[in-house]
Amino acid sequence: MDTHFRPRRSMLYVPGCNRHYLERARTLHADSVILDLGDPILVECKEESRANVVEFVNQGGYGAREVVVRVNDLDSPWGSDDIKAIAQTKADAILFPNIESKEDVDLALNELDQAGGGDLPIMVMIESPIAVLNAKEIASASDRIACIVMATSDLISQLHARVTPERSAVLTSLSLVILAARAYGKAVVDGIASDFKNMHAFEYACRLGRDMGFDGKSLVHPVQIAYCNDAYTPKVTEVEYAIEIIKSLKAANESGKGTVVVNDRLVEHHNVRAAERLLKLHEMILELEAKYE
Image (tube, rainbow, N blue to C red; front, side, top):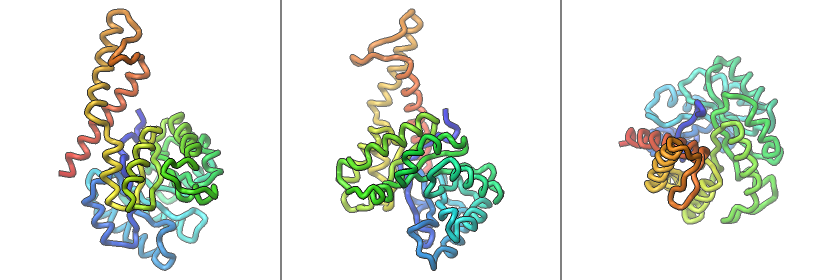
């Protein structure tokens, strides 16, 4: 199983310029927090945000949550300094925006290694048409890639498309990135929904993403966390079915049969692998949520 495997049902962006939000993120039930130094931060607040994030990450207090820092673009005035600062912290990973090729991944890793972060995993953002088309080479670029994060708002803008509840404009792009991620054993997380007051549409987007194969969803407001977590948490019936699949096929194999029928469905070895992954995720979620209490 992927060494970077862990629950990422909800990945909450937290602006580095707001100390109250950085503090509050320590209490929220998000699986991952992305402390953000990137595009949403005003130019005049860039250096202050960096100092805030370094301080809060080093102080800790985020418990079992995965702590990720999104840096600025490598070719921006702040990117290199962001990497140098974050490489020396206790962050779990660095999220690099605007990754469009294997060369971009190599450049990001080289910058990180030179800054002393040679053991630090990275995450990469897919946010442009060329990045989607190059998803295969990006996903295969390094074993240090812990997760691929979609930036669907950026992608929709560059596609000159429109946001619809069915997400028809980006379904092809999402599927291509999921295919690339799964082909190379990478986690992959869906993009944000900027309309955080339309919870009906958000819940639908969570369940659509789950059914497509995403591991979770990134989000911009705490009110969205519960919807993400609910959609991407294996249900009791799914856990019970996974256990039954494993037991039934084992018994069938021991009796000389290669397949078995469970709940009127044919079960083969690939179903067992999927069931084992689901049960492992279930266990990890229970452990994570126990630490919130």
